[in-house]
Image (cartoon, rainbow, N blue to C red; front, side):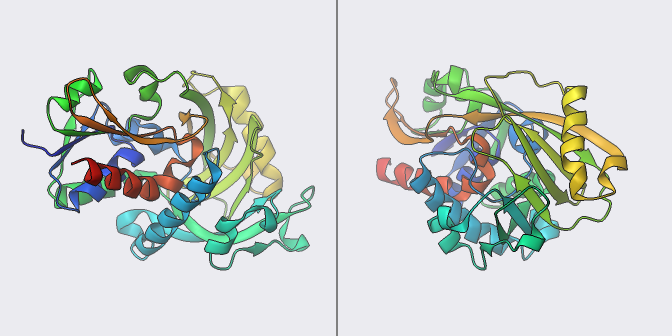
Length: 319
């Protein structure tokens, strides 16, 4: 065996886990069926804020761990794709945010003049905003620098990965539904519209926990990301023109130039929702130890480094 660990899955969860393991002197190989540009992670808006990820207490701890790592990476935004950006989480009271509010420096209640019409409360904070088109290749380079290997291949089964290395980490996201198999993993479809930025430099999000239609405006180097949707059990990945029009219409009141901004791109991603994230070890039939790390819903970027650290601890404990 050439590898100590096979990480199955090359999205943000798989790559951060692989980097964490490789930088702790493990010989790591990533099996990724798709190039990073075709993963769900590439569609992510990239805001570091817990969203649709459970269990809440553990997710907050993972998120704060990731927050600190991403904040450090924001010192090199052109290399890492991470910037610190001010913004508002609407329909949110700081007292309801618990340890997330306590752990994010400067997080405070939004003043009335900082909220758009129709919103009675909100939280203001300066948090990492990640350009996934830059961040994912950064993680691939960092993995290579640590001696890790990335292979474009599909795992026919977890046991097949276990025959290639004594340790396996399953970071397959929605793919875990069939690979494990785990029917508790379900898609939550998200559609976004990317437009030319008319001059917006702060983020805004209004996304209730169970709402199918959300509103967010995220300034990225490649354009302004407008969203979105959160439709459970929808597998369609083709953008819907009517949905795109509705997204632009919902976002337009926040800036006078949005309604006429030139559309650059439409994208759809399927968030890998699960009632709770699965991070736990399991012995495969062939004898290899598999650590599962999937089911992060809409919070993959936010919890990535925290979950990677926890998965790495389980790998260390098992071998």
